[in-house]
Image (tube, rainbow over all chains, first blue to last red):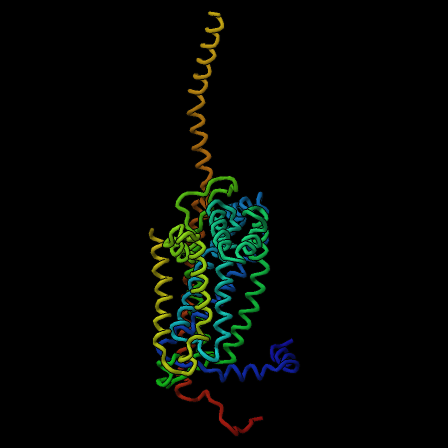
Length: 354
Length: 96
C-alpha cells in the first residue's frame, strides 16, 4: 500500500483534516517568559523516557524482599546494557522531578493558574505529588538499607497526621512496620497504580492546555505583538530541547552510574547520617526546625499539620488569588510565589550541604 | 588436682592460641566482606569501557547533527513565514 493510499484510508475513516487545521491555527505568543512554555513539554518527554526504561527494568526486577536486591545487582552486572537502563531510569527521574518543580514554580510565578485554568493547575499539582511518590516508591524498590530507612521515616511522618495518619501509614506499609509486604505494595504503586493515574492526568492536563490555549502573564499581556505557530515552529524547538535533555541524561548516566547500597535488614539499626532524596530535603529540614515537644504536644505532629496546611494553600492558590482571576496585577501573590520558591530552594540547599 | 589445673591452663592456652591465629583471619574476612559490598555498577573491562565511551561520543555527534538539521529547518521555515508565502490564499483556483 503506497503512502498516499494509506493516508486516504485513514482520512476516509477519521477526521485528520480537523486535527491538521487545529495544529495549523494553534499559535503560541512570543514574550520574555516564553521559555516556560517548554518546561511542560520537557517534563512530558522525560516521563516518556521513564516509562520506556521502566518497562525494560520491569522485565527483570523481582518484587520479593529476598530477591529484590539481588535482581537489581543482576540487572546491573549480568544483563547486557542493564547498568545503562538502570542509570538512565535513575537520572531521568531526578531530572524529570527537577524540571517538574521548575514548571510548577514557573507557573506559580507568572500566575498561569488564574481563571479559567484552575483545573490545569490542580491536575499539575496532583501530577507533582504523584511524581514524588513515584520517586519514593522507586527508591524503595532497591531494597537497600538507605531506601529502607527513608521509607520508614516517610511513612512514619505520614502517620503523624491527625485522624487519617494511622490509616495512611498502614495502607502504605501494608502492615504495622515496613516489611516485604511494603515492597510488594510499592511495586504495585510504581508500575501499575501511579502510571495509570499519570497517563490519565497528563491526558487531561494536555487536553485542557489545548482547550484554553497558552496562558500569557498579566504583566506582558498588552505587549504581545507576535505569535508563532505551534506546528511546526514550537514543535521543532521542543524537539531541540528534548534532544539536549536526552544527551544530558545519557551522559550523566554513563559518567555517574548510581551505586547500589547494602541489602536492607529490617532488624538492623538505620545507617548514620541518613538523608532522603533531594526533593524531600525541604520537608526534612522543616521537620528539623521543630522541637520534639511544643507545649506538651508532639512537635513532629504540629510540623506535619503546618506543612499540610501550606501545601493545601499552595493547591488552592487559584481560588484565593481573586485579582489575577480578574486580569489585574496581584503583588501579594507574586510575593507568596517567591516565598514558596525561595523556601523550597533554600531548604533544599541547606539540607544538601548539612 | 594439679593435673586438672595444668589441663585447664593448657586448654586456655590453646584457646588463646586459636584466637590469636583466627583473629587476623576473621579481620581479613570482614575486610573481604566489606570489599564485596562495593558492587560494580559500570563495566570494568578496559575494552568495554572503551566501547561505551566511543558510543557516547558517536551519540553526541549524532545529537549535535540532528540539532543542526532542526535549526536549519527552523530558520528556513521562519524565512518563508516572514516572506508570507506559506499562507494559503482564499479563492485560489485549482490546477486540476
